[in-house]
Image 1 (cartoon, rainbow, N blue to C red):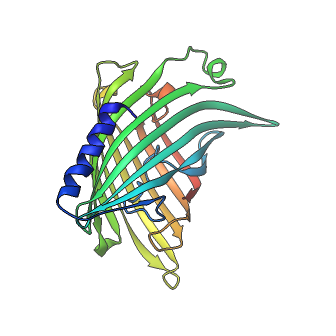
Image 2 (cartoon, helix red, strand yellow):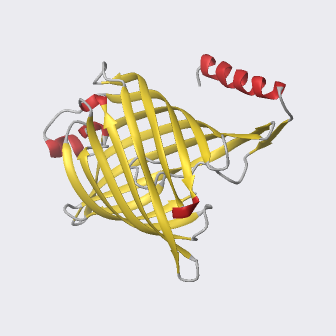
Image 3 (cartoon, rainbow, N blue to C red):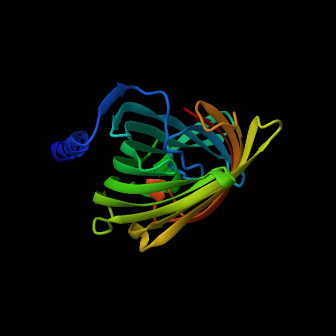
Length: 268
């Protein structure tokens, strides 16, 4: 993390400490900022199958809470997330690794109220073809990378057992669209409890407006079932996702596609 970013974080907590009692714990067990279920690049451990092609999407990652800070009843958490996103193509007797994207994020979450949470984000994403990817597409790879900061807000809605969220990313370094800096993201989900309140059946939506494709959009719709039903982790989800618009895979970022797939997700 850059020195200016560290200085900003320390200044934030110093100002808070002037006005109230300060407490700190390391590796807290709980999280209060909830996952974006329909977001294609949310940190996750999952495996999904595309209905229309022989593509599989295998993702290995999670978010780890590092520090919990409480100042004058204001709760803050610093977390780190990392995920490797793979596209796999299964052919008889062989698996081709098609694309590999790497994502690392650092988060500062602040509970503004019981239902409203803010999230400051500093992150990096880089994307690559792998194995037979370039040969299969008969084209050259590009240098796709983004370093960014972001601010998101999430509002919990107990009535629907869900949430809504909105935020913006600013890419302070990005390639190849070096003069396109913003991504706006919004979405939400709602759910009901079934089978003696043991399972959670939900519907989720995620929208991204990306300046890197001239304000084109990526739209994701997901319905699924989660166990256990409580808002805690670890948990497991099985879900159907429909995604349309511009690709989330970096090497294909300026291509449009519609995809339908079924997936198994493990949330840690």
